[in-house]
Image (tube, rainbow, N blue to C red; front, side, top):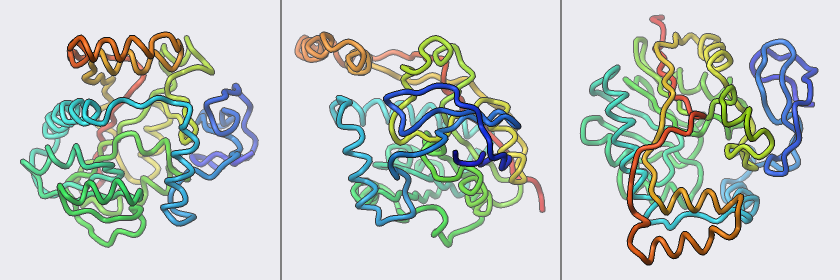
Length: 286
């Protein structure tokens, strides 16, 4: 088994097996971090050419039906606006770094009030994001820029090879007194306890699963002080809900198309699935 990335303990206990994960879910006996204890594939960026990793991730997710790109983009912009408004309560302006910016939806909104830079290792996504904002096409470890007022990363830390190294590299690029915002699934949540191996957050490239205690320990280990942990929701539409439910009930696949054709697929509302947390931390003065 892979040793715990948070405390280094070498002997985790097995929690469960899920066909949607890249290996068994284990729990560190010492600190409680839950993670994939051994890996069948290599679905993290950094160790191989990014084109190779991107193709592996694509193939690993072939069983999932994806939302129409136009609808995904529309909802992403709504969620970006909500996230930005929350972050601005802690850091209203300045230089902002987004690590794992995908197609640049959050950067598109954030550039209204911040001087922005994105980091994205997936070549195709980095090319799309480059039409919106300056992009570093690689991992955060290879970024030279420093002294950002805030760094944000949404649903990336659960994908990386080492969360400890990931946070250390982000913290090194934020000025003392600057903020770091991390959004990630919360495994100490009702949905996980209810669905267990079928939890919606179990997908092949998710390797680490935090709760408020373990994410706080990780931040503190890298010279960061957690200011607030929010249980957050998101904007969703009828199309999105039916798309996600169809992963569990195939008969709903036709319902998604029907809702779209009837013009109700884009009906939008805010939901809280109770299994996502947004962590705001401040870098200690050096």
